[in-house]
Length: 113
Length: 141
Image (cartoon, rainbow over all chains, first blue to last red; front, top):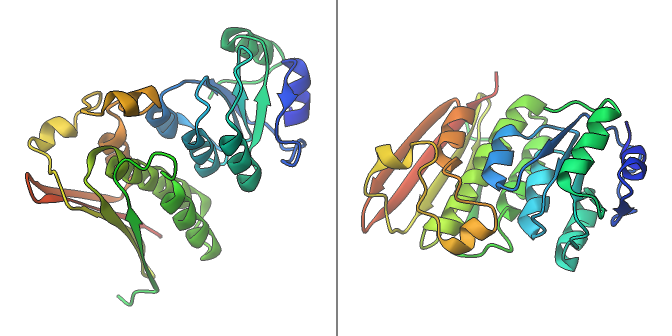
């Protein structure tokens, strides 16, 4: 599954069209504790979190994730989006809940970590 | 062994917005040097954790990157306040992080255990009122 295909599936808006939408998504994950994500993240991961500050992008970039997904209509701050663009991290925003996002991605065959 | 590269990164206490910048630069540097992906990932995780610890817990400090032909070494040295009980601090789930840090998603008590798990060698020395030094090395072969 590519980032673009995933975005369509979860009715998400791509906040960083500059990032590579054709990048492959390797697995899915959801967690709001950044240290936890640092311990369990993986390259190519799609990470669902309600956190929207700059450190989210730092973690996603260090782990070489494919995308960060922000649920429930929450908006990521502009400085974080700028950093995401600089780092080439794709940020998707959707009105769906984290539960619904994961359910749809799992139903489409995306594995957990 | 001859040091190929040495770089110092000052890390400011409480600077949450810029936290991760040193780690990102270090990762880029090592990638350019051709360090393999698995080692790079482990260095990145440990480096980010230790950088965050400087931001969250210390009164400020410096992160030093050393690269020699056999290994990558990260040294975090701060100017206090020091850790009263290292054994407790090393326990997964134990955290003294502030409410501000917790709101940002830190303070899960995973930092030090995460560093130890990812480094080939891990050493922590601390004295209350003086400071903490963490030395981590990552074998390249």
